[in-house]
Image (tube, rainbow, N blue to C red; front, side, top):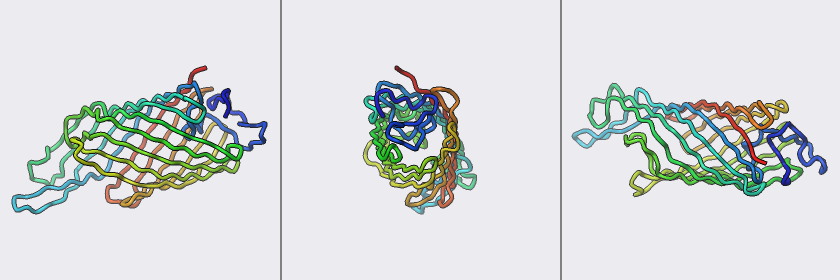
Length: 271
């Protein structure tokens, strides 16, 4: 990708002078770093729900587990990234989060409120992406890093979190319009008082397809220690420098029965 590379223009063969067989369109730019001197803006809204489990200790020191009658979050995130080089970008993620919890009807204790809801600013994340490609851009490798600052303004301890961090290494290989996707990741969640935290590790594997010049889709299995989810992603090019993405996932092997669905809008500008 040279300095004049524009991944969000009308679909054109990339590196055609090298005989590349793959066509890069706006629908792939989630898998690439932002080219040098360009800006990418993404606005995304996601609805997430799960079978939220919590524990209570009775007067005799016995611990009882309950499943909340209702728990969900709605998150709208603004992400802005700028390309430093064609293979390195930096950015910021700014989320607004609404969370709602309803205590289990079988829980007669007073430790948790009968119901609670909060909305506010989530953790603002500073991001960077480093990528490379080879074999005439049939192979891609992308390292995505993020540090979440403890900016969560929600007061209720049910929802607010301390800082967080993530690291994702993704590999993609394509045979013309078909491809395979594999990634490994780690996510760290700190306690509110920074007295500790925990890492969660996982991996993804799946397939990708360039259905048309304007439609790109992936389906992957997301595997963690205690659950497995199936996730889907479709992106539609709707302009010379913009696209719409639709995504969702469902837990198929785990206790929390998590589900999410979302929609996003992307635009690239500069130069």
